[in-house]
Amino acid sequence: MKYGKEVEAWYKEAVTRSLHEHPGSLLVFTACDVAQKFAPPKRMVGCQEVDAAAHALEQLARNGLLCCHRVKGELRYLND
Image 1 (tube, rainbow, N blue to C red):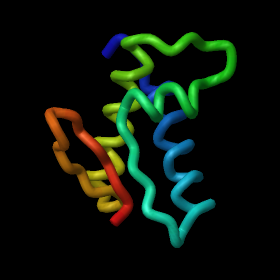
Image 2: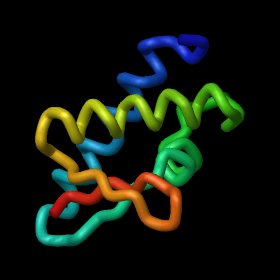
Image 3: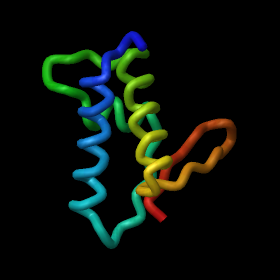
């Protein structure tokens, strides 16, 4: 993994915090959106960040916090 576990953990924490801040809202996440919206400070968003965000979203889905759906070839994760 090129991006490092710390970046993946950063995105996982950011998405989890967002879920807790909006408990009654339907939230939909994609790896690109998460990488851009929750980018770590002083870090440019590129392929490594998108990969880290994707892995974080996959982990949250495996842990039951998100559901994963493929829409027009893109993975989308929601809190339904």
